[in-house]
Length: 265
Image 1 (tube, helix red, strand yellow):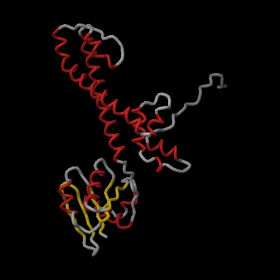
Image 2 (tube, one colour):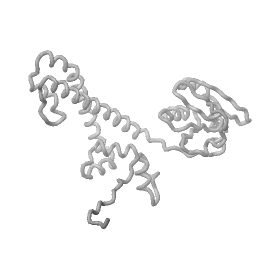
Image 3 (cartoon, helix red, strand yellow):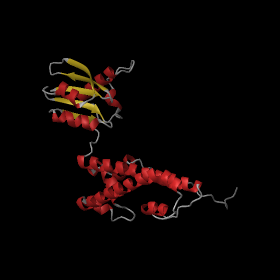
Image 4 (cartoon, helix red, strand yellow):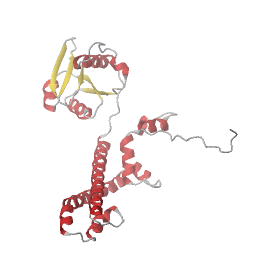
């Protein structure tokens, strides 16, 4: 078996391959599917290590289609870099340490989210940006109308544009706000479509459906929770719940001691 490692960067990546005969092959290639194919297609089966990152999954999947075994490793595992030179840090020295970690099994595999949950997470991220854009549009519209002496009545977000139209604004002000209204109309339609999709997710996913039975938990929150955890079986043991909270970045609320005014001072 051959062993390899990729020190991946956005534009170019440093690659090292150690053949079965012990030959060391170093290459610096553009980080594209075509160049990865040119380098790894037709080579003997290899175990290739890459660090977990934003783009590590597509690289891993592409290398697997070429017939290789890929390890996506946790970059926070310090022992993986034990063979790294302590001199000036370079990409070649980094990839040399990674390939030695690959050869000797000195790595901690990172969790690779399933394709279904990656897709759900993408949709949630897109929805979050749509909601943020709509919120900015509402804030801008309120600020401009207030400067002109108009107040938009309170109400649900979905009826905001109708409430703006009810003000019968002057032509100049109405024309200025027209681009924002047009964008918000499109955003509203897309959000409605996305929310309808997530309602269908409930019917297809029994875990999401069960979570929505909890008070104040809707389809979006439930789907986001399931997508974030993916395989809950990896959180096992006595500290399973604590591992989940740490993984999600949740911390216990700090409660300050009560101020006892009657205490002797």
